[in-house]
Image 1 (cartoon, rainbow, N blue to C red):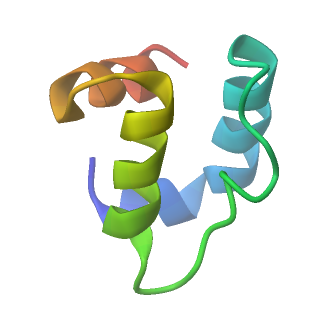
Image 2 (cartoon, rainbow, N blue to C red):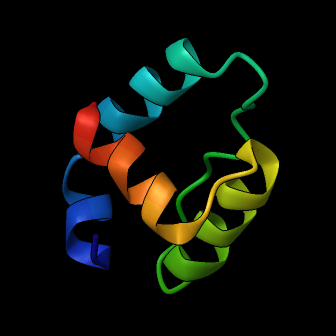
Length: 61
């Protein structure tokens, strides 16, 4: 997953992630230009997933 993929359909993905993982908040999913890796890292930690595991979650949405 790259920054373009995250930015391109983030609102849709954000809604699906919140539906699937109730522990995620709007603040967790706030997209900031240039901070994509930081946000993804925080999501990985909160969900207890590896980078590859998180990418699989996003791909499955």
